[in-house]
Amino acid sequence: MMNKTEKKYPTVGCCGIDCGLCPRYYTEGKSRCPGCLGPNFLEVMGQTCSFITCCVKKKNLETCGECKDFPCHKFNSEWFGKDAYDSFVTHKKAIPNLNFIKNKDFEEFIKQQEKRIILLKEMLANFNDGRSKSFFCLASALLPIQVLENSLDSARKDIEKLGISIDDVKGKAIILKDILQSAADKENIKLKLQKPPNWK
Image 1 (cartoon, rainbow, N blue to C red):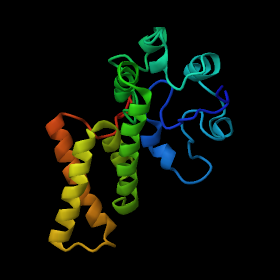
Image 2 (tube, rainbow, N blue to C red; image 1 turned 60 degrees about the vertical axis):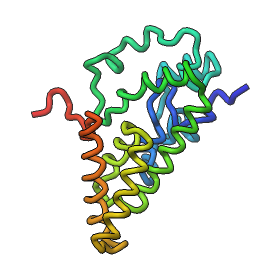
Image 3 (tube, rainbow, N blue to C red; image 1 turned 90 degrees about the horizontal axis):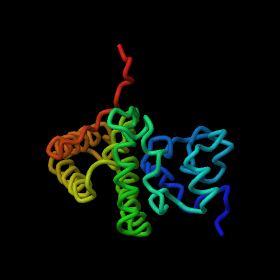
């Protein structure tokens, strides 16, 4: 039986959100989110959500995609409807992630997510100018894995071709972000953070 106070895979939320690709997962210090019911979750977040209560505590599952009742009424809420608002746009992949888990395999989903996490970590380690973390997290969550791999490869080649110094993080960030944005435009995927509905 699973320890009901901690998930084995906190990088994927019960509700399908990619916690392992979220900016808060890569925040330094006490405000860092440990992922969905990850280590010290309650100390950081203060409380759990209804998805965790039902999925993990009651049914001993990692995600709702493994539940025979998925999708249940919880997925008709404002968080998952067509007009759902999420500044990080994470909700866009939640249902597709859960459908993948339900129709294919949870372990296969984790393998795919781990590939995304490795790519994101490279972006954050080598291309983050201090202002690009959220952009790289969004790209890693929303773009196809092959597109991410190709974008990083193209960025490395352009950096070498242009003679950009390995220490010029700002220059490297500009190149990779332009490549990712261009790839996103071709895929019709928005990589900009959403503004609140009442933003002036």
